[in-house]
Length: 275
Image (cartoon, rainbow, N blue to C red; front, side, top):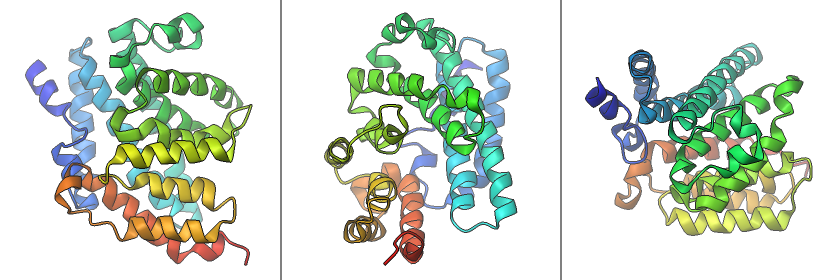
């Protein structure tokens, strides 16, 4: 079972899922893989890698195949139902992440709420930290009326800062990309200069292999700032990216999904700009 768990856990960068260019094929395959991993996790109660894969897998599935379709033109009733389902999966992902952190560093959900627990985290914990705080924040964004969960925003900010301190290069700038969208929600807010710094670091770390940060910045910064020229330039850069280029094949699925979002946003830019 441990050998099978190790094999199934390999769903990250460069895996068969990540390299795929057919999102619908992955959409149909992932639920079976996730349920298989959950079945194994019931038997292997100390397998950290399996729980990391579950946290990552439920987060990616909820975003790519529930949240994104809901945001890109789904009928209102379907969009609301999809976002509610996504929120439940995000919380499931968060709980798998904290479970794994508890196993690896004795820092579970309760410990993360204390300065001592946060300071216990080390560089090797950053993947788990990332796939815990991202679905946590996504669950909040999906339902801002849950005041108890909204109260965790400062904690997520603390965890993000710890992740950046430990390994700001993780996954070619994933933490910096997350900061672009998350930082405005912090109680103290953020500045355009800080968001630009995160974006510049994303571009540097992506090394021409990932494009999601282009779409993220366009939506989170350029659009709200009514900077139409920058908005269009970033989305057109993403839309024109060759997802099959050899250098970027390990991130092909992510890039295909980001490209779809960029094309849709360009087609609907009149909803963003007032001129």
